[in-house]
Amino acid sequence: MNWLKKLFGGSTVDFPSLMQNGAQIIDVRTTAEYSGGHIRNSKNIPLQNLSQNLKKINKNKPVITCCASGMRSASAKSILEKNGFTEVYNGGGWRSLEQKILK
Image (cartoon, rainbow, N blue to C red):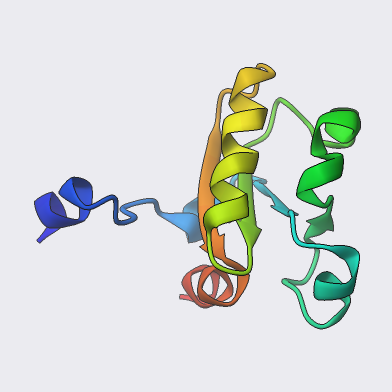
C-alpha cells in the first residue's frame, strides 16, 4: 500500500515524530481563515506574505506547512525550499494534519 501512496503522492511522513522533534507548523491561510480555527501553537503567515517573513521561521527546525486543502501549503513548501530550508513537509489541509498529529 505504501508504494501506492508514493506513486500518487500520498503522505508517509511521521508527523507526530516531527512534532516531538520540535517541528514548527506554518499555516499559510489568510488571517481571517486562521481566525476561524487552527492548530494550537501554529504560526499564521499567509502565503502572499511568506517570502517577506522568512525570518520568523527557524531554519534549524523541521517545518510543516498547512492550509485549507494542501494547495497553498505545497506552494509554501516550494518557497521555503528555494530559500534554503532543508527540512520542509507539506502537511496539507490543517484539519487532516491536526488529526495526524494527535495520533
